[in-house]
Amino acid sequence: MNRKVHIRNEEEKDHQRVEEITRKAFWNLYVPGCVEHYLVHIMRSHEDFIPELDFVIELNGQVIGNIMYTKAKLVDEAGAEKEILTFGPVCILPEYQRMGYGKKLMEHSFEKAMEMGHDTIVIFGSPKNYVGLGFKSCKRYNICLEDGTFPTAMMVKVLKPGALDGRKWVYHDSPVMEIDEKDAERFDETLGKMEKKVLDCQEEFYIHSHSIIR
Image (tube, rainbow, N blue to C red; front, side):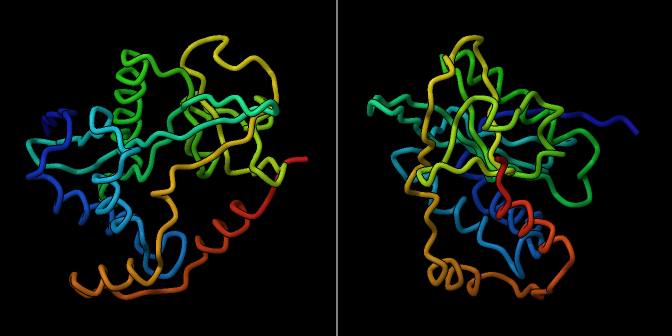
């Protein structure tokens, strides 16, 4: 079967479709249910959202995935700030996962980010999904959280050699990532019913998200 793949910027007409895809992709993955589709819904109107790095991937004219970026920052020990990027949610419809579409989407976004002059991306996720795309442990770049820890799930991709000089940095997410769980639940209740389940993958996520590198 001939498969035509096209990546383009998200348009307003895509919003509902993208939120539906996000919900299907993340449902019961990390916790029973999910909040990622609500994050997508509120992220577009936030000041840290970067529309130029908001992409959908189409297969034969049908949107099957999406990636969205926001601004984040690093702060060194002297208080100097460095603006960087983070992305997420990034998702592909479950029936098209593990076929290379997510990789195509991310690599396209990396190229566009570099063209815009960005040099560093910090994300949280499962290392097995990202090390093949050039992400490395935050510890290798001396980037930690405010409590001084180096989470296993926090990874860094340097888009421009020498962008990070080895000094200690503290990572700060955009405030848009601080989701109100009750608002997210109310939003989800306006959508079609999906069954919440407890799955083994949620425990795997818990272990990854609560472990640190010493």
